[in-house]
Amino acid sequence: GESVGLHLPTLSVQEGDNSIINCAYSNSASDYFIWYKQESGKGPQFIIDIRSNMDKRQGQRVTVLLNKTVKHLSLQIAATQPGDSAVYFCAEMNSGGYQKVTFGIGTKLQVIP
Amino acid sequence: ETGVTQSPTHLIKTRGQQVTLRCSSQSGHNTVSWYQQALGQGPQFIFQYYREEENGRGNFPPRFSGLQFPNYSSELNVNALELDDSALYLCASSLKGGKPSNYGYTFGSGTRLTVV
Image (cartoon, rainbow over all chains, first blue to last red; front, side):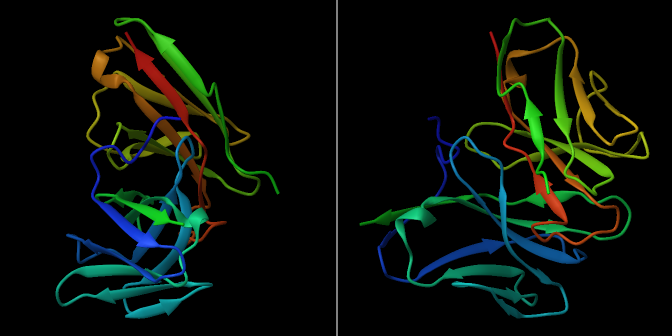
């Protein structure tokens, strides 16, 4: 199928290793910062979010870190698996007004078996 | 629980034509947003509908319009199609004021529109 990852930055990781995907954001007023996973031919799938008043949140095999001082967001995936291969987008959302998700530049994660 | 469904999955149109894309919301959601995703880029917000009215719009011209129906389903209409309109069109349903979590803001798989 067609690739949503065309011309995107690519991160290649050995299966079983940990992955770290980084993102710089611009809007300090956002209430939520979100990571989405998008596989070819599918819509973005929610992975994890973090509120702006937090600096770390953990999920199953994933951890999101938020550094508001330098406007940096990262996604850590533990024990990366072939099924983790996809394009990952960081995004921002405000809970007030209308809910609009603003996506950042995606990163293509390639897991090497 | 049903997810967000979009139709058709693929569509080819000629420049200058009009197109209508459809979206059924996830059960329990009352808000629908539409996004355009060009190849190799992140989705861009087009507009959002709540209570059958547009309540937010991104940087898209008026030839992009929409509807929301009483059952919360939605349509995206694009008039006078241009070659640059070729993209994946995503619908997302949500609950007004809800959080981004998997059940709070859910994307469909999209409609791939090709304009020739």
